[in-house]
Each structure stands twice: as structure tokens, then as C-alpha cells.
Amino acid sequence: MRPRGPLHVLLLTADAPAHAALLRALRRHGLVARVSRRPALLERLLALRPAIVLVDVDRPVALTLRARCALAAARAATRVLALHSGSLEDAAGEVTELAPDGFVDRCDGERLAEHLTRTRAERAVALVN
Image (tube, rainbow, N blue to C red; front, side):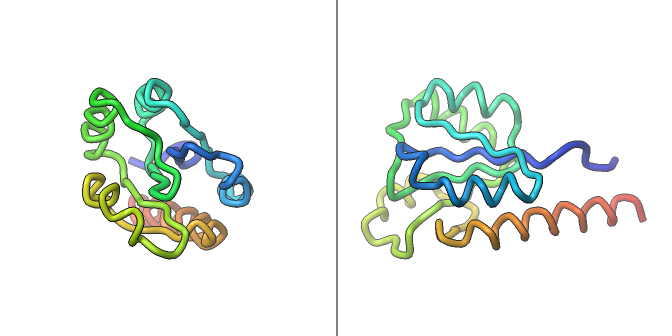
């Protein structure tokens, strides 16, 4: 079956304005980018089944147990990436607890958007062929 609609990305951060360039890059590439600053909103947005969840480990949202469970349950269909600003030293505890599928420097928004767009197109071609 062919992927339908745009790729959905969810950013989990306590400071959305700090990621304005990243959000613009994702949207410019046709991705649907949403932001959650609160655990309750996170649960609702995870129900939309985003393909990627970017978790800001520099400006983390204090997650409730319920929100952590929702994020863990979404892992079957969602890739969780730790969004950082170059160093993970100060965020070691957050990263360990999160157990992300990968890491993204917050300054690499354009490259991330290009990669996600290209990867989705390649998967669509593979499914058709």
C-alpha cells in the first residue's frame, strides 16, 4: 500500500519559538509539523500517529506517567528522535530515559526535512515497484 498524505512530525519542547527555523524547514518541504508543550496535548497529538516525534532534550517538557506511556505505546509506528543543540552531556538523564531511535542537531532542520521527504518518496517508489 502506498503512503498517503504528508508525513506528520511532532515536536515535543518547552520552548517552541527556539525551533522556529526547524518548523519552517519541515513545513517548507511539505511535512505537517505540530508542537506539543504540554503532556495532555502530547497524548492527543500522538493519537494522530505522527511518523516522527522530535523530543527536545535541551528544553524538555515534564512528562506525566500517562504521557510517557502514550509515547512508549506509539513507538511501534513512530520513530522518536532526540533533538539537541550539539552536546548531550547536560541531557544524559533525559536521553537515557527516552531511549531514542536517533539524534538530530537542532541546527540541521533543513537536512532533516530533506531526508524525511526523500526517504518517504523512496519508500513510496519501493511499494509501487
